[in-house]
Image 1: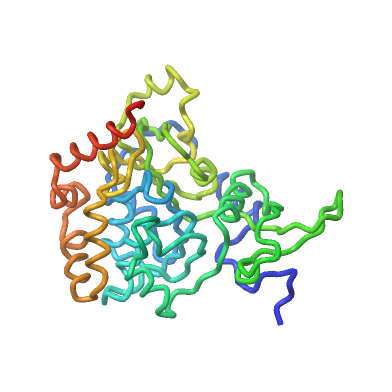
Image 2 (image 1 turned 90 degrees about the vertical axis):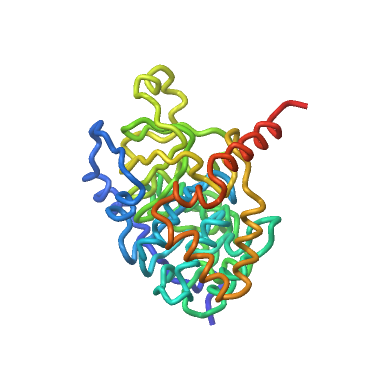
Amino acid sequence: MTSPDRGAAPLFTDPSANAARAWFANKPRALIDKRTTVRDAVARLVSDGAYLAIGGFGGDRLPTAVVHEIVRQGKQNLSFAGHTATHDFQILCAGNLLGRGQTLARVEIAYVVGLEARGLSPHARRVMESGEVEFTEWTNYALAARLKAAAMGVPFLPIRSLLGTDTFRYSGARVIDCPFTGERLAAVPALYPDVAAIHVHEADCYGNCRLRGTSVADLDLARAAKRLIITCERLIPHDEIRRDPTQTVIPFFCVDAVCEVPFGSYPGNMPYEYFSDEEHLRQWLEAERDLVTYRAWVEQHIYGVEDFSDYLHRCGGLRRMQQLRQQELLLDRPG
């Protein structure tokens, strides 16, 4: 029987802060031009078997172009941090059970399968119920705390969350006694992803990033990930970054690749830029209900396109993007 003082699940990553420090010590810190294409960034920085984490919050500020490219390039046996995952997880699951190998092999679950008020993803549920994906369970806060520990350079953090729950039993957490008060706490291990992708509003060529709206755990994720791909709505001059450095929330030395991808969160929402395409998301969910239909959908929207720009064109192009921009601007208007 599993001890109530220790979760039953294995860890999918090494929480050693010293091992992570050895990795980060060799990461370049020079101001070098990191602009590239999404295709190149994924080919160079996402390897088979890597542990992947995705930024954003639910359907907001998703690095959709990177997730598409991971599936299109046929990356295999990835581990995934399902922190606040919605459409990003839905896309990754397209690489499973469709006769193209196994994109996902291990998932750390806090929130996956659901697309919030839009309902559950039939195919993501199909994948998770197939038995071919190993998983552990955490809460949203516990995964955020794990990224916070990694960003701080410590191997774990104590939290009150998880204690006394079944989620604790299916996690990799442990119960510890506080050395100062004797209080019982849950210790959650640091999470150092092999690679992460974050979509932001603005970045310069070196990787200094600005974003608007909620950041959730992305600022810690940027510091925890061994490799970081940034996609941005707009590239801005470095002089603009220097004019107001207080707006820079992700510094250049965390970043390995910078890709300019206008409308890069589509069909998700980009706060203050454009609204989510609810019609397209409904079509995606409907297509998933039948595997034959879904295979055709994925061929048309992921495998059968040249790049993300081609995908946007098939989804209505600039006209549709402008409609979503106007919708967001109307919602953002006071009163």
